[in-house]
Image (cartoon, rainbow, N blue to C red):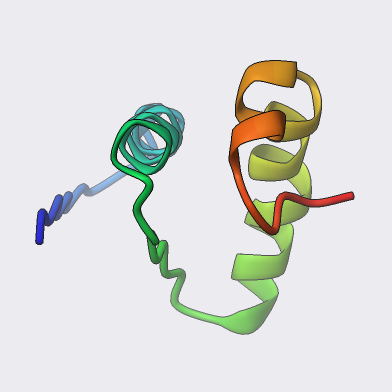
Length: 70
């Protein structure tokens, strides 16, 4: 198991970095990845505004991730 824990005092493009690391790891290791947010609303917002566009906008991750948003 590999863990990445990032603690920050302000937003500094850390979520963008984390998304790329997560996608790379999930694709190259055929891994299940859990990305958590403090609340359900924040998780929904992050998924729809950051993660979904990245996966749907690029065929490489979209074709390789099971359960990718449709």
